[in-house]
Length: 132
Figure 1: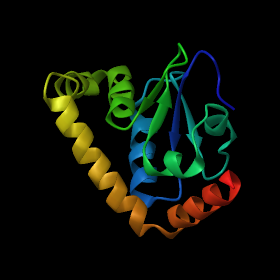
Figure 2: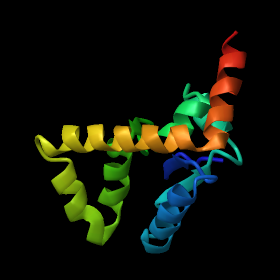
Figure 3: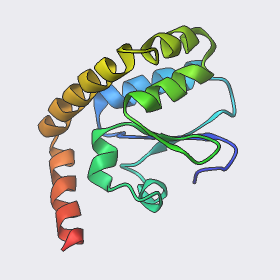
Figure 4: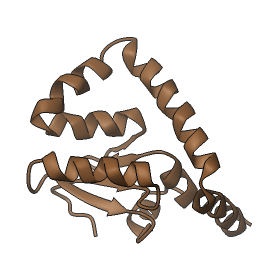
């Protein structure tokens, strides 16, 4: 369950790469800043924000303490801004022309990863069924 005073990070816990990256952030992040939500275990918090399960699996999502949703590179920047040694990376990636380029690169990689994982493909079919 997400808490109002923490940054909620919604990630794909069935993706080995995603899980390892989030585990790294968990180890280095300050205590009490993040609520890490593996949406493959419980997607209800993200779905309450109006995000389809498949979209949550495809791109990293994070909700800041004001309730604003950050997606993709913007979610990473939000995370990095909270971790002392990563703040420089957040500033660099968030600057000028780098942000849109990083965003395009992340979306391309995320799409490639998403298309390769069977649980993601099952999620697309499930989302399609619920839309009907």
